[in-house]
Image 1 (spheres, helix red, strand yellow):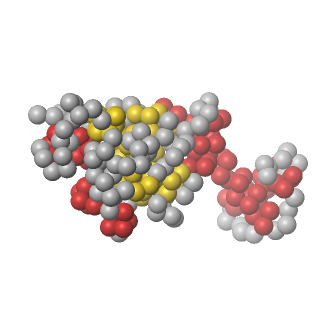
Image 2 (spheres, one colour):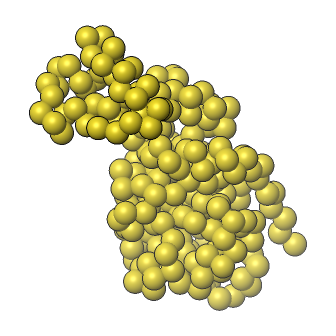
Image 3 (tube, rainbow, N blue to C red):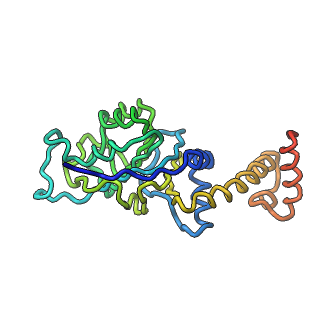
Length: 249
């Protein structure tokens, strides 16, 4: 009998706050906190306009060695670990798959994703492919992928080897339970221990960016308003205080 471990999930309010800041701000602020690049490189959005955040369930693939893995698509399904990662799904979870950048194996298909969706999953990040893309898109999940294929998960060169272990997805380390923030710009990994500091920095950053966006749209000088210069800071602080008092411009 196969047994796999669940993850420790962060507080929901922390996840919701990270979803609101988006991947670009998350990446920039993590850089300031010492993480040079938290971007999962390779997978791109196949569901434009979707923004999600959630804890990572992780699935690892390895190069196929036939003496270790001979299971076909439907034989002995409970030996297939890509099913077991989905068994852990709770509302708000995101599955992150190290599929080694393989473009010939469809890690998940329609049936697996129906199950994931109905258990409350919100997104899938795969350094590789899925299949049944048209049907999976109809489910409303966020999808960040390298591509698609008609092949099933272990049909060609890879097979699933571990669930909820550290993985290298898109050459970026993802630990089980890390928070993934994903949108049209891509998917970013937020380490749990850095999430509170990231949010504190991002809140201030988002506020002055809103002011700068307004001034630039009104014809303001880029050198003055982005990034916010010391010259413009008193003006920004007056604007911020006015916003807090309910005034609008």
